[in-house]
Length: 177
Image (cartoon, rainbow, N blue to C red; front, side, top):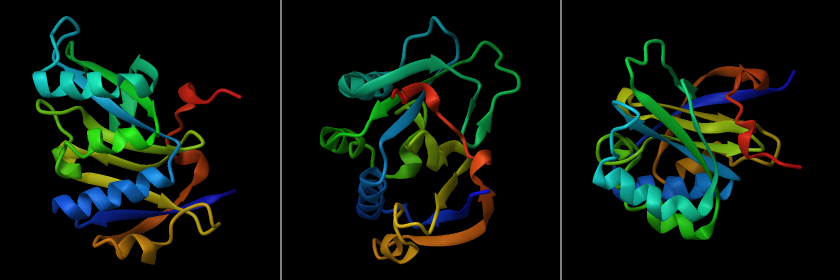
């Protein structure tokens, strides 16, 4: 069985540090997702959310309504709508993502929520902004950044536990062979 080391990332409250860290995460990812929240399906997205969605549209790989994503499981939807849109990694997404100052600013109503970054379908960095929760899953196999490399960007990584690979959130909806 394959295991990952689970870390909490601290220190992304600063805009420059948050952007440096996000660029490093993007460099090791092949896709990312955002959650588009509405109180009702027929409700219009807010202006800030709509602008981000429109700018990211050329990079969209998949779009679906969900009740589960990394760090979140909706038990009682009360009519709320949660759409997860998955995007491919591209150099041109960086300036769009950097319109948001820090990781903690990815929240409704100004922006989509809960960015999650994937490698081969597995969530390896996930954020639940309204909970101020994040999880970074690393392996020591050369395909992931080293803790020291990430900490050199100005963040600190707090070890939480080991997690079996089969327990990680898997987004198969953008993987085509």
